[in-house]
Image (cartoon, rainbow, N blue to C red; front, side, top):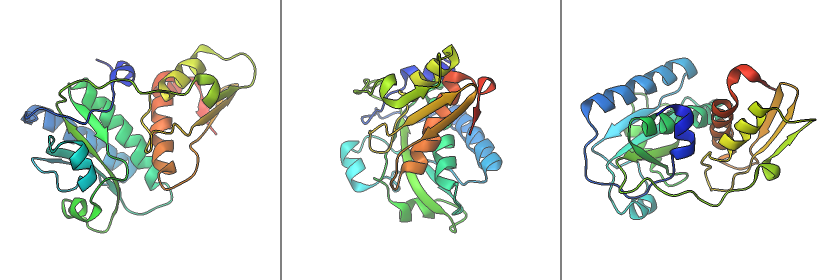
Length: 221
């Protein structure tokens, strides 16, 4: 499965089977995380065999069935949330290609417990992603239409349509799909509303649009 195929196949999963993630798969995930941490100067981490960073409400929704999660964290900076959203989106789609399932827990996380798992405590945690082997592959949720979230000046090229299609598959913090993407020639602008998770949503949206459209076909403005 490719990342592009994972965009269409990945859905939120809240119930998991009691199966340990293999050492080889953990190694692959950690390599992906380390690459993102180095490139974007962030501090994500995979935690296995432990659910302490997942918030109480999320654990109830998960029916206490998953014991692995990814911490989204980094040094506080203006672009941190966008970076976490972008790299977190890469991880959930990469996990899908490895046969894993995920749930981006939004605001339902225990930042204090998660921070204790990090070597550097001088970071801000803004989310966790539950990860494991799902009881199911999840189901699509009601989605907005392309016309509701996109505008293009002139005739839409196929790459723009493909980008919007991928964007419609992007998970958002409160499932509101707060996106508006506009295109003019090869210039593209994306907004993700306002609020505490708008930066996270922006990063997630940018990653999905890039996968669909192909980064070589446009540039962000």
